Amino acid sequence: MGENTVQEVKIITEGTAKIFEEGNVFYNPVQEFNRDVSICVLNTFFEIYHKELDLKEANRAKPSNKPKKKIRILEALAATGLRSIRYAKEVKGFDEVVANDLLNGAVKMIKKNVEANGVEDKVTVNHADATIFMYTSTSYDKRFTVIDLDPYGTPSKFIDAAIQSIEDGGLLCITATDMAVLAGNTPEACIVKYGSVPIRSKACHELALRILLRSIESQANKYGRYIKPLLSLSIDFYVRLFVRVYTGQFQCKESSTKQSMVFQCTGCETLTLQPLAYKKTSIDNPNSIKFNLPTGPYVNTNCEHCSNKHHMGGPIWSANIHDFDFVNNLINYVKIEGTNLGTYSRLIGVLTMVQEELPDVPLYYKIDQICHHMRVATIPALKMRSAILHENYRVSYSHACKNSIKTDAPISLLWDILRYWAKLNPVNPAKITEGSVVKALLSKEPTKEYEFDFIHQDANPPSRRDALTRFQINPTVNWGPGTRNQLMVEGNKPSISKNIRNQGKNKKKRNNNDDNEEEKLPDSKHVKIDDAEMTESDEIKVTL
Image (cartoon, rainbow, N blue to C red; front, side, top):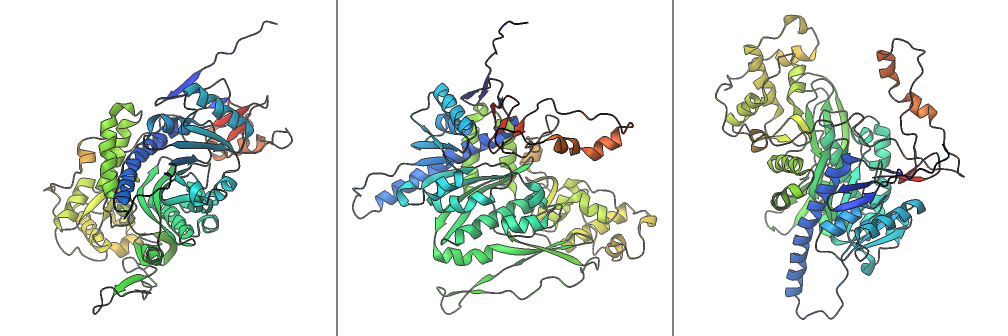
């Protein structure tokens, strides 16, 4: 009542960094894993990078008199600068990190947080449009060694500029949260943003990774450059990629052999990949290499297993999505750091699963999915994996899906194993209707009796056997990226009532008996803009 109230200043701590909350900062803990894995990747990368520099210097005919180029990191969309501050305090082997943001209020906040952490000598705060800033950094002496893109939604509009402003052998770290586009819900939007047609598949999370990798490769090829993926992760509601960018005309020509179209049966969802090209070496001259077009399509008009038609998507990246030597080094680094990392348990679990993945097998099936098509009781994962291993094929999980099965066995073997499983666990005859997928799949007899009782020694991988944290349960309600950013125009807040009213509309109808009951607005009335949010008092609220 007339008395001045002093607002308590809170401090958010993550890793060794701290930022001020002051009532106008929204801290999103979901991204802590993203930042932790990025810090580990950068430390591992710089160890390799400096060894490469030393080797290059040792192989010179005579020592270079040129001053050494500064090793710089760019965080193009820095928001509060938390990531840049953590890089400055927790990553070794570089000279400068540039924390860039478009918004004046965000830039002021970054400067304040940088000063509070005492990293002014490492962090340079920059106020510019991210794309324009990267396009003005394409000359050799201005290029960055690492560029980190972590936008809300699609990174597609930043990739071209990043490709041109990264040094040869540099590292691109890219996040995409527009999973609805990448995972197949809106193919018309995906082809506009990424140049590929997605398909609605149970393997959608790995498809998202491969569509984004193919898009980056395509952008790089325009400038005689190509990518080498180090680590590709599907995490929670987003994908996170770490790729090195190199220059080489011949490697660009090989790009077509690393991309494939995807056919998916509309009935049993069998997946078939067809490469865009293949490489052929001359028998007489091993140095003579030609790139040929494949004959196709690789599938018939109707699926050979259930006689349904196919959907076609792609192209996708069909080469390796991880560098397993790098992943091994990364795991060793994480183990050394231990509990200094806030998400240590999950890091070890996810990276161990990545380490176990089959490198040369794109995409995966879900065990419950293929059992559903046969209307048979779901076979336990260990029994299915064991049966495949007993047939001398390889098998693994995918880090992108809990109940996944990734194998080099033909899909015909999987169907045959399930036919024998159906013999032991009979299908309800009422479900075997004329013209159905289940009838087509069960119309054949299994070719042999498969071993289900004796579990193969390799059926249970270390990540599962050691009960590592592989798939995290959502810790809070509304676990996700939040609402799309909106820009203030002439100080007037855009109308948000319609957007808020429509959020969860169908769920509210189902759960609310009184259709006329007033819908409640969220507790926090913030309107997001590009890298920040605007409160009712026109303060900047920056989203991490």
